Length: 90
Image (cartoon, rainbow, N blue to C red; front, side):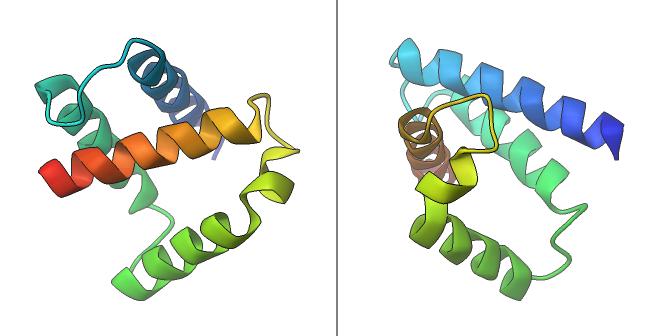
């Protein structure tokens, strides 16, 4: 579990660098990030239903959930938007 947490934190940092650097969601870097993000997430979300539930929980409670993280809610919201756009560009 600690390894997954470390990997996730690294992906967040990489994603925030992409957001801050205005890396386009259609870029190979963004699509590779979302691939690795989804791969890591699949360890915890075994079905599309649990993935959808996690996304809904985040969308409805991102400010509260971000309080326990070292990043601001705004940073995480921008990252999630970047990941969604890269996933859609896919």
